[in-house]
Image 1: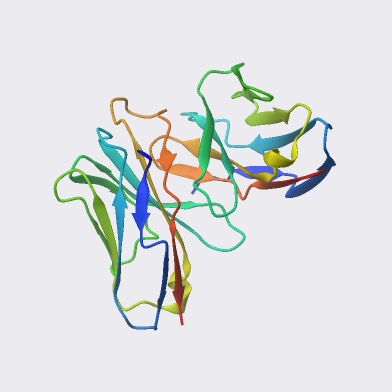
Image 2: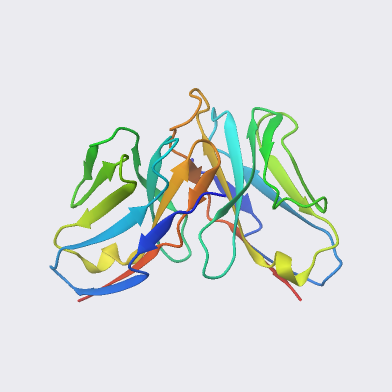
Length: 109
Length: 116
């Protein structure tokens, strides 16, 4: 079992604020790092799959960076909106993904 | 909607009963995965299939659990003699299955099981 940790556990921000969360994972035997957004009562939505050290990916106001040598990834949300409220999960591994416990984001209008 | 679908969405059962869940992956996806999420935890890997072949099983998958994908399309997950500790969200995902790893896994909405 691989240890994937996310911080913070939960976060409340005001609408319009920018925010970021951290995912840390084992730095040896790296395969890929996945980010998902999971809204209540919906399917987890794939945001990014990151594979190369130094990777930066962007989707609208959300972006992510990857450092495989030190074993961490950051997810950034610029100008948070209420619809960004969700749990953000990262997962590490090959076919069998090891998930963190997630960061629960609440954006206050 | 052509995403991953799961049935049922909710299941309440009594301890000792058998339950079966179904997952329909995105069509043309060769790989299918099962995960389980308990309260306060992230999803935990249970097993995955490449077409009809079950390629990997987690140690979490006790002998009361069995998964099948008989024709390489939909999959079923059966839990025999359910226990209260089996109460969880059971998630299914699928991916193209063309690469060894690093593929996006697309998730269904899950089946929430409550064992009384």
